[in-house]
View 1 (cartoon, rainbow, N blue to C red):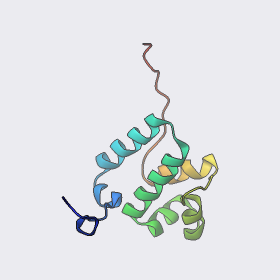
View 2: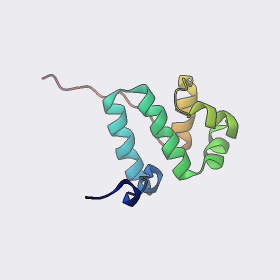
View 3: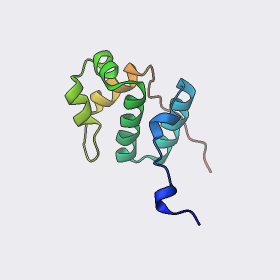
View 4: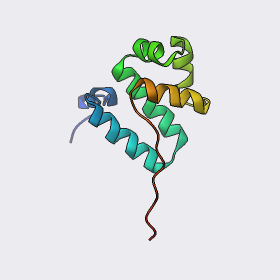
Length: 99
């Protein structure tokens, strides 16, 4: 049996190497519809891409970005859109097929 000491910490940011990795991750999180998970995921993605660069590209201050993406925060929708656009992603409406 593996002991706790032998387990390595999982770092999601290490898995987000390509735009496709990020798109897949975001799609899965958005499909679940959990706002807290979306904020958490955007935090991982911003760290993977570099918080300073995302802050610059989004027009947000670095500290403001950290606050907006920390656990338990409730950023405004326009902040989420700015972060997504800085990552070169957009939100789109998709018609669900009826079951």
